[in-house]
Length: 441
Image (cartoon, rainbow, N blue to C red; front, side):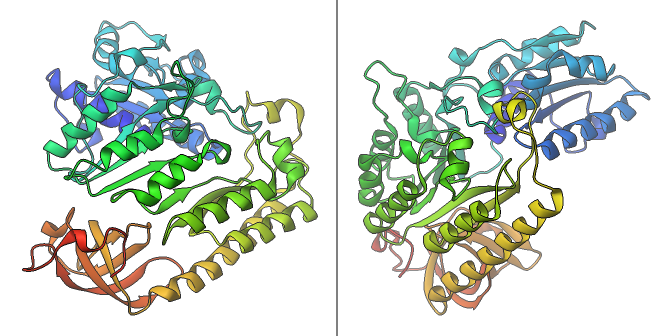
């Protein structure tokens, strides 16, 4: 979501006449869009502020700090760093031009106002990709997991109007975009705050499946109890919905899940994964897991190990528990798992997931996979991904392939990317991209 926010701010500033520079040292205005999910990300923000403060000592420079850490720390950032000119929130990025103009009057300030009603598809954007668009459809989170700072920095859930989102998709399609990703902290809660109280991500996906120019639709992040049967069925029926679902489980122990205020049990999560895999052909499931949550015993950890073995995720984002001031867990639970225990558990899960990835990837050996190349992997190779989110690297220096379809014969397997050779692309005579609506020929 930070990427999408930055695209909007950049677009607004460009429209207002500001010029972009690739070299931050040449900039007259610097905006730092921060993250507060983990302590490491917040420390990175502080380090970045320090780098620009050194530049500011030698010349005029306006520094603004936004994003989740800015929302969390607010005035404390101004008090800690004399050279920061203004702090803005996660819900007023549409007001960035006015905020900068205020800062240019040499008045330091904090503005955390809510301007989400001003967000629409008509806002100018400077996308980071020319074929893949990121569209935030819902802001905030209502779940209040005890370890998570997001509800306090992004606010409660607020969905964008349905027609506004569809108009944005049509706008991207007209500009030649072929992939979109719907974004939200709990993306499948989209629409629950409307008058009828019903989630509507399935309706968005169904509508976008009618837009011929859009070849793939992704969405993240999901919350396990918000995934509906109608959404699963729509993904299975859709010609362009990606066969990948990101389902953060966070832990495999019911005791720890309850302590985290996750609203499902271990068995409910396993049943959901089975349902998704049964209903959606070739689907892959990815997840998030936190190790070392306060009170996590070896038995709790082993239950997480067993869950990974049973679910066999396509990818797992692993993290050691990081206390975040302002969260419920920070207030009432000590961080009582030694760092060496956290690290040992993290390393064990990393090796386990690598083993699973390698085993799962074996089924792609010598297969012909359809991908959309995304960018250069090296000076002599490109990378892209399949409809079910497998990364594929192949030898080519032809960047004109980026954003188009290509068929790759897989020659080498790793625990991460697949490696292969291109057999044809959609510009070849007789190639019909509709022959295979999933990912494998």
